[in-house]
Length: 501
Ligand code: MSP
Image (cartoon, rainbow, N blue to C red; front, side, top):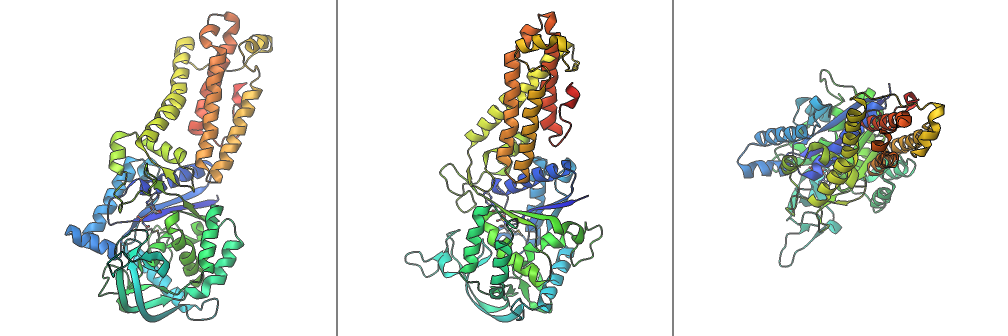
C-alpha cells in the first residue's frame, strides 16, 4: 500500500486558536479522508508548539507555569478539534504532537548531534559557537533583518513589520547553523523540483529570498534569557532555537531519533510527506527545514504547500495582534460543523487569501448545503416515499419505453448522465490531487444542479399520473438517489452508475 503523510503546522500553545488555525487542520483532515478513500495508508499529524520565550511570557502573564500553560492550551485545542470532528474518534488526526513529549526531546537532540557531525556542502562545520547581536521578535520567534523592522517616531526600539510590536535586543553567546553554505543546494533543490514548493506563485518569493543572500542562523539562546526549551546536547547553558525544535516534530513524531513505542515509522511515512503551512511560515519550512534535513543527511519532504490568509471584511489579516479573530468556540456555538468545514474548503481558493464574513458563511450554508445538496436529498427521499412506498426502484428503462422517457426529457439509456458524472468525477480527482479544493467542490455541485434540472424537466408529479411513464419515473428516482450516494460516499468509484441499467 502506498503511504501518504500529511501535516499541519503545530500551533503555538500561548493562546487559544482562531479560525486561521482551525483552517489548516480542516483542510488536512479533508485530504486525509480523501487519500484514505483512494487507498493510501495515511498518517495525519497536528499538534502544539510548546517552547520558547513567547510561551514563557504568556504563562508568566497568566500566573501559570509554562507547563500549566501548554497543558491548558493543548487540551483546549484538542477539545476544539473534536468539536469539528477532527479528532481520532471521528476519523481525524492520527497524532496530536506536543513538543514537550520526552520522545521529542530525545529525537531533536539526536537530530542536532547528527547535524553537528556533518560538514556543509561547502565543507565547513555545520554548527559553530559565536556571539549574536541583533533584534528578535517573540511572536514571530525570529531574528529580524534590517528590512524586516521599522523605528516608530520618537522611539529607539524598533518594531517588527508583521506584529508591530517592540523587538527584543539580544546580545549573547549563541550556537549558529551555517545556513550561508546552503544557498546553492537550496536553489538547485527548489528550481529543479517543481513538486517541492507549491503553489508556483510562492516559489519565486523563496528563490529571491535565497538569492538575496543567506546569513548564518542563530539556533540557540542562553538559558538565562530563555529557560523554556530543549537543552542543546553537551551545552546545558543553551536551549535550542524554537523553530529547530518545532520543525523537527514532523520527524520525531514518526519515531526518528527516539525510542517511542508504537511509533509509525520514519522510513515508512517520510518518503511521501506533504506539509501544509500558511504562507507566512513558508520560509521556515523551506529555507531552514530543507537545510537542517540536508545537514543531517536526511531526505526532504515531497511537498510543502503554502496556503493564503483569512482576512477580515476590511481585507486585514486575521490575527491576535489586530484583535479581529474569529474564535473557534463562537463558530462552533452558532454553526454546524459541516457548514464550517465545507465553507473553509469552498470559499477560500487554496493558496490565495480569502475574506471571512459571517454573511458569506451563512450564504454558503444556505445556498450550497441547504438549498443545493439538502434540498435535492429531501426531494429525492420524499418522492421515493410518496411514489414508491419508500423503496428505491431499479433504474432501467426497457426499449419499448424509450419514446416515453424522451418525451419527459430523459436520456433513456442513461449514457449522457453517466458521462456527465464520470467527467465530474475525473475533474474532481484531478482538482483534489492538485489541492484545488474549491474548484473540486464546484465540479461536484455542478452535478447536483444537473440532477435538479433532470427532476424539474421530467416533472415526476406528472409522470406518476401516467402508467406508461412508470419506468421513466423509476429512472428519475434511481438516478437522483444514485447521484447523491456518489459524492457522499464513493467519489473515486470507477463503476459509477453501472448498476443503473
Ligand atoms: N508554531 C508555529 C508553527 C510551527 S510548525 C513546525 C506557528 N504557529 S502559529 O500558531 O502562529 O500559526 C500556525 C498556522 O496558523 C500558520 O500556518 C499560520 O499561517 C496560520 N494562520 C495564522 N493566522 C492565519 C490566518 N489569518 N489565516 C490563515 N492561516 C493563519 O507559526
